[in-house]
Length: 90
Image 1: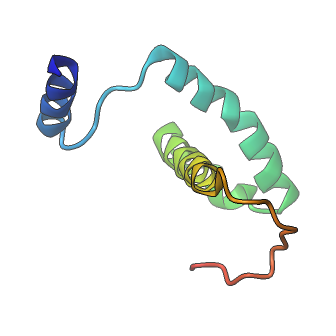
Image 2: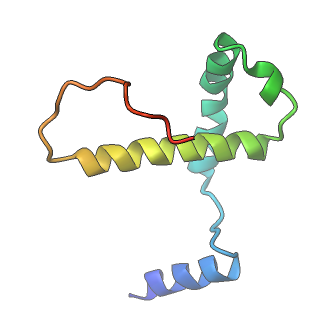
């Protein structure tokens, strides 16, 4: 599969990074407002106010990736009533 081989080569050349598509960049920009609203509501805006857009994008990507990965792992497993009483991993 040439496209996979080329993608792997690009990722290797870029230290594991492949440039984001225009849609991915727009999605990250669109996610900034709800992120800003949430951290403002939680009183955390001062911590993030002077961060670079790349830093905010990294946080958004980590949250989205973790959320989507979890949802994919749970697919096919009967849903149970969940709570947020498990330990936070940090």
